[in-house]
Image (cartoon, rainbow, N blue to C red; front, top):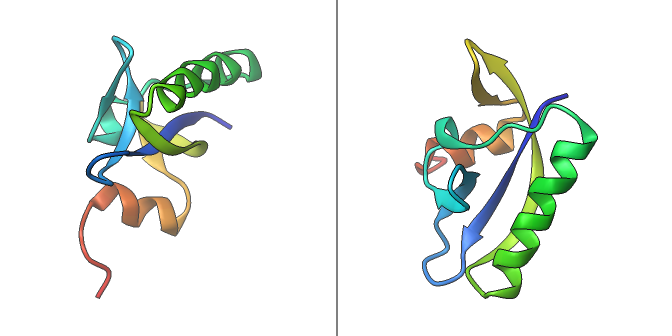
Length: 88
């Protein structure tokens, strides 16, 4: 299953996704998608560097489905995090 790396910015707690250019983006649509174990391992190594630099916390692989090439959350938890709104 395809996956992306998600985390929280250390200073603000904002949900972010690992994007092109070795940066963190607030939108899931910008996330780099790993389609195999090797690509996922590469993304995890990049995220580990950002964790060590105290930029993000709680980075992990998140399963996604691709819709027209755009990553979309699979789980309800990740859909809520990606929507960036309250869960009233």
